[in-house]
Length: 269
Image 1 (cartoon, one colour):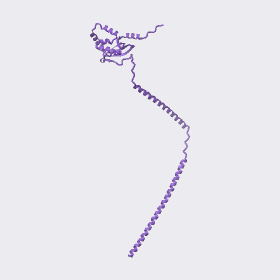
Image 2: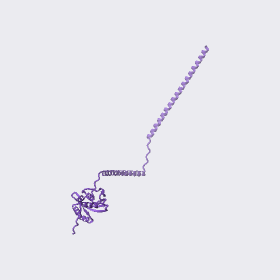
Image 3: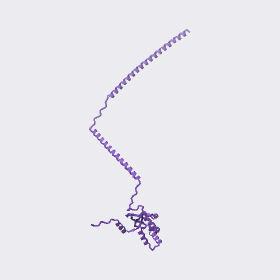
Image 4: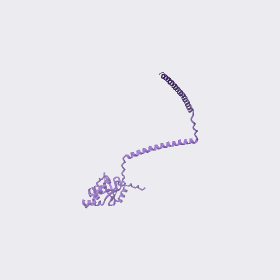
């Protein structure tokens, strides 16, 4: 019993001594690490100060350093500069001129559009030009009244083709109607009608090739009759508000009528 107690006590002392040694070793390790950390902190702070000092020196040198002086311009450079300035001035002048021309073009285009949009004025009648209607086919012949020389011509031709003796005479001037009635003496109305139909039977169309004004109330129509392949010069006379057939003019009669419209030559001195 006593031996066991002695052995236990001896073992407890050994354990305490080991713990004390371990505690001392741990404390020594902690102290060593603290010393290393403090040393590293001191070194780090010194390095920071050095970096800050170097940065300040670099900033000071950068602010004090002056930019390199530009090389002096040579005569060639000055000439090139003047040439470029001259070209710029010419370009500006051309640009201004181009803008002015573009404005004029736009104004002309706008005026052209207004002219096109405006209704075209009726052309003045030309009494010496070909008829605008072209050939008048037989199928379209009809009574057209007496308001114009062309209308009177168609009314007379249509009445003749239909054998309408009364309408045919109504298309004539009083002198021509009297002459026609005299030529019809001794003939019955049926014979006169048949004669008118026979004279126009082969006509397929008629066309006014030329209209010549002899006076404000007298014109000559050059009429081509297709089918008969002949041309007649028909004189038209305005009586009141209506135009009438005043006869068929030959070349001699036409020349005489034209001469009557010319002023008389001056008397010889």
